Amino acid sequence: MITPLLLVLVGAPATGASIAAVSGAGSAFTDTAGPASPAAIDDGWAAREVTLDELLRHAEGRAPKNARAHAQVSLGAAAREAVAPLLPYNPSVGAALGVRTNPLGASFEMQLTISQQLEIAGERGARRRAAGAYDVGLHRRLDQSRFETQVALRWAYASALLAKQRLHTATRVRDFTGSLVHTAKRQVEAGDLAPLRLRMAEASLAQATQARREAARVYRAACRQLATTAGWPAAEPIAPVGELGDVSSRLDADALVSEALERHPELVALAQELRAARAGLRAAKRDAWPEPTIGAYAAREHEPGSPFASRVGLITVSVPLPLWRRNQGPRAQAKAQLRIAEVALATRRYELEQELRRSIDAVQTAAARVQDYGRDVLPRFDENLELLQRAFELGEIDIIGVAVGRQSFFDAQAAALETWSDYLAAVRQLELAVGRPVVDTMGAAAAPMGSAGPAAP
Image 1 (cartoon, rainbow, N blue to C red):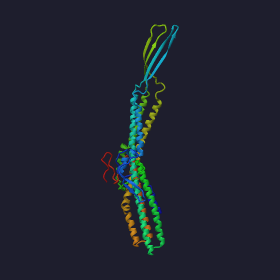
Image 2: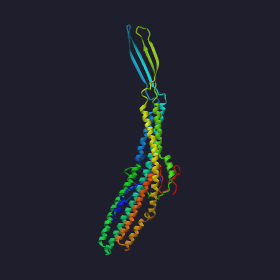
Image 3: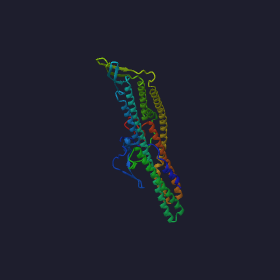
Image 4: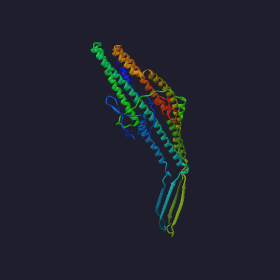
C-alpha cells in the first residue's frame, strides 16, 4: 500500500527560504498591476501567474510588515515637530488693578507684568539633535523591515514552487496508478490477473486521488501565503512562475561574516539607536541647567493727597537655584537607555556571527544533499514510472513487483523533495544572518555587497 508515502509527499510543510533573484520597489494594499495570466490546476482553481520581481515591487509599500514600518516612521516626524519651537515656554502676562488709601483719601493704581523663561545652555539644539537621531533610527528600522520582507517573500515564493513540485509528483502518482488500474482491468478480462489484484490497484488509485487533492490544497495555501507576504489583493489568487533552480555551496565564510558585521540592516539600526541614546543623554544633561526668567514691570502709582501720579518701569531677572531638582530622573533614564543600546549592539553582533557561521555550514551541507538527489533521483522519476508501467504491460513483472518498485521510487522522490525543503530553510537563515540575498535561482553565491549583482555559477 502507498498511503504512508503519499502522505509524506503532500503533507510535509513547504518550509525554507527563497532562492530567486531580488529587485524592486513600490507602494497601497489593494492595487493590482497589469492583465491576469491564469495558472490553473485541474480542480477548477485558477490564479494569476506573477514573477518574483513583480511581487517585490508590489511589496515595497504594500506588504503588511513594510506598511507597519512606514507608519512607525511618522513618530520621527512627530519628535522633530515637538522640539521645533524656538522657545519651549509661553510668555506670562499679569495685570493688577486696585485702590490705594490713606487718611487723605483714595486713588486708583494699576500694575502690568510680562515674563519669559529662557534656555541659555543649548538645550533646544541638543533636543533637536536627539529627535533627529531618533528619526533616522526609525528609518533604519524601515530599511530592516524591507530587507526582512524581501527575505520572507523569497522564501514564500520558493515554498510555493516546492509545493508546486509536490503537486506535480502527486499528480504523476495518480495518473500512473490510473494507468495501472486500466491495464489491470484488461488483464482481468483476459483472465491473466486475479480480480483481487485489481481491487488492490483500485484502492491505491482512490488513495492517490485523495493525496493529489491534499497536494493541491497545500499548493493553494502556499500561494495564499505568498500573496499575504507581498500584500497582494485578497480577491485575486496568484501563483509563482517557473521551477526551483540549481544550487551552489560555494560560500566565502570570512567575507560574508565581515560584510554582515559591517552592513547588516539590523546592526545599522542598532548603531543608529546607540547614537540616538547618546544624543538623548546629552539633551538630558543640558536640561539640568537652570533656566532664567526675564521680564518687565510697569505701574501707575498715586499717593492720595499728592497732586502728581508716579509711573514705575522695571526690568526683572530671576534664576532658579539648582539645589534639589537637577533633572535627575530623565538623566538616569537616559543613561540606562544608553547602556541598553550598547549591550544590544554588542550582543547582536556576537549572535549574528554565530548564526552566520552555523547557517553557512547548513547551506553547504543541504546543497550537497540536493545535488546528490538532483543527479540521481529527481530527473529520473517520470522515466522510472514509465519503465515500471511498460514492464507491467509486457508481463515482465507482476502487480506486486510494480508496487514494490513504485514504493522505492516514491520514497526516493519524497526524500529528494525534503532535501529541497531543508536547503531552502538553510538559505533563508543565511540571508537573514548576512543581511542581503545570498543565493540566486541558479544557485550561484552572490557577489559582495556593492557589486553589480550575483556572481555567475
